[in-house]
Length: 335
Image (cartoon, rainbow, N blue to C red; front, side, top):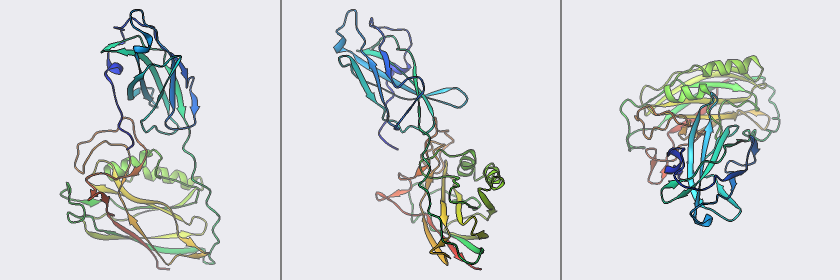
């Protein structure tokens, strides 16, 4: 998470003004303009008072994220001293890509609040695609077979804080696909399939998302392995992969947990024109951003709004100021 986010009382107080001042006027951004960054600056023209000096006022800025169904969630509200002419406020929340936000402003003085400005709106930019992946020189063997081995080290010894009873992993899900196909990655919002996998260990609806990618020629195979009923433990799954779809994505839920998982996204199994004999990837925990639970066995607490997928870098997985890997995936060519 980024900077601490403030929700001041002026945002949730009655809309009826208790301060005799004019409403500020939004200047920018407005009219659903797409802002170039995820920390835009909101600006208004000044409010004037009937019985108070204009420069003695503060201006409160409140920001809402608009959901796909039309509802709005307050994500930030803070006040800054009013300036002469135009007052600017820079957003500190971690905004999501490709999302509509609404904002408005009102004067604040000693617990009294002026009338709200008109509501303005803007959109954040679409998450930029990953940089193009150079075309791989291809091996002469069109097809290879791999064994993916999950070696889990996660235990009360490696991650002692709040270590849960019944620790395990959901079934390993493996997809082979094109370089341009992305089912998840750091910084993007989790799909419904990734959300359900991370929160419940469910194969569905991720299997439907993969099926759609296969039907559109963006992926080739979807393989479901076993889970780990306990940890430390080892589980493995075998899969075929071809030169047409030489990238692999793997996920498995860390259980129990709010929405945490292990995985890798878009690993190439070809290097220097040859199938790789063995690849070892250390596994760190990821946060799907869909549940606000703070520890493994926290009660369900849907994130409002959802946050981008990110590495989990806080307690209880942080030990001595660092996050130790939960284990590793080993991809070993067997044919």
